[in-house]
Image (cartoon, rainbow, N blue to C red; front, side):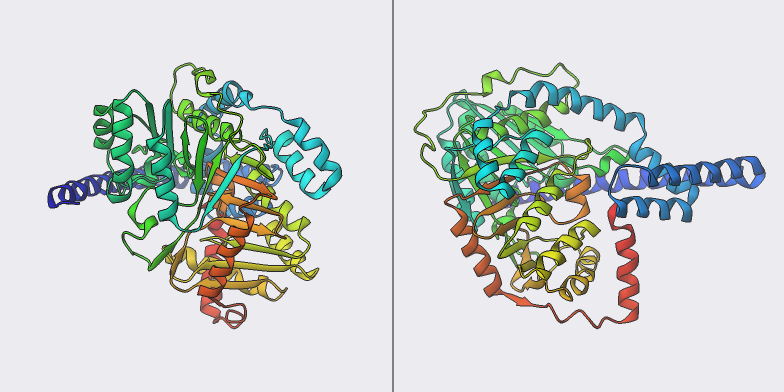
Length: 519
């Protein structure tokens, strides 16, 4: 990158950070104004104070009866009872505001139009229910409860090195003939994305349809709205997910955390890495950045195509576009004979399902020999903690790898607060010493695995839009096993180090854990 480009990047980042600060101050001022007005009224009018406290108490009872995770319910109840006015107001804006309801309806409309194009593939599922009931039930759950079908005849490549994944993406983009879809939580308009952008510009000029979709918060430190104008000048369509606005709106807490590239509906990529330089170790803010990705070629890419179109259309008030032009046929030799079953799937906060967490829980329940987990954050529900410890108690080798160098120090303290309760029941904990581990993957019994964007934390499992790929007896599983072996080699086992924490540390971690489900 030359000096002029570097200056432009610094200006973009400065403008983006300035916008974030402006929005943050505006929201805080609105919350302060709301609290002051209500407190003043409560001081002068006893009936207002009593009414607000009664509403808060009724809200707490209503939350207790909701069909949701108990830990999240208790966090909200504690918050509302401790700070009734502010707690009730934030809860209302999170779940009852007109904006949230409007977004719910929009996603329902889009999903009916877009995801209905997913194939049935019942002939893949039925035999497996008899051959391997544990895996069969997992696939039954994904298909019949969540709507995501299984596929065969799909080639799968796993990348434990993000540079290899980036090179594979570049090759796929160069061979695009019809369309390119890219959806990422964070895009940084610098070196790594620049390598892709050159190809995108070339392809758009040759008539290939190119769409880029990114999350506003995830990318706010990297690019600003001028990025859209720049891409549009090259004939590349861009949309932003859930742009931040200087108005109190807690749907802003729900971010698009997906990472998807689709080429011609034939080749797809997903995994833990975004399109920013640190993910490819071009910069080193937290030591060595360790991440992974996966490439699909074959019928299973249809799900990734439709997931992209779901989000693209959800951010537009126009009628939902037809998906048929993007469901292209490809040579039946592609993926033919590939072993194993592939299930791309997604999770979102606008339905009542907890797809990401339930897939992980099902793997733990069915594990016989081992379960290996890599996650940057370990902030788990009581259900997840129980299944991890139950698996270890019945003799399953359960290992979890987390970062050795954190990117968020407070969150890191919450992650470490779970070590002792897991370790005392036999779960082995490792920290990746060279730097920051950003992989989100799980492997069990050399039989099944998940690679995707879903962390073992509340934000991923309950607040974000996510995607992942479930793999059963895929040829890439040995490569995932090798990746874990390398992680263990480069990590230090810290299983026994966190039993004797100071009272102050335990108290601080306890407070953070109390509100972690709401963050």
